[in-house]
Amino acid sequence: MEKPKHHIFVCAGFRVSGTIQGTCSKRGSKEYLPYLEEEIEDRGMENIIISSTGCLNMCENGPVMIVYPENDWYGKVDSEDTVSSILDAVAEGKKAEGHLLTE
Image 1 (tube, rainbow, N blue to C red):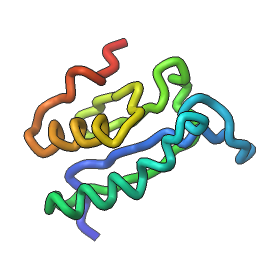
Image 2: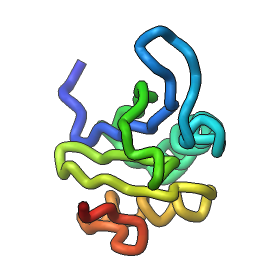
Image 3: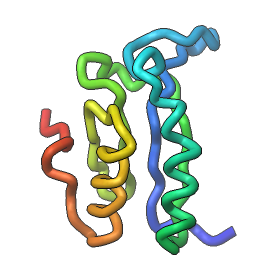
């Protein structure tokens, strides 16, 4: 397998014990995983993988997504429109400034 150009992490809010807690999960972050996969394929974006994660400890900003290798952290990812704007930014080599976490 070729090393991906981008890796998108979506906080699923589960703890090490496997218990699902936290804001991201309660606000439906996992429901965006299929949407992300479909959008990436529909847009013809290649070399991007998506992973769900355990709690990222950014609950006050949840749901949270991270795009690597840029290390861009996005908060309040609460709609398909928000996910689309982040993917637009990735495709253009930019940042989705309206959702970017700076602290």
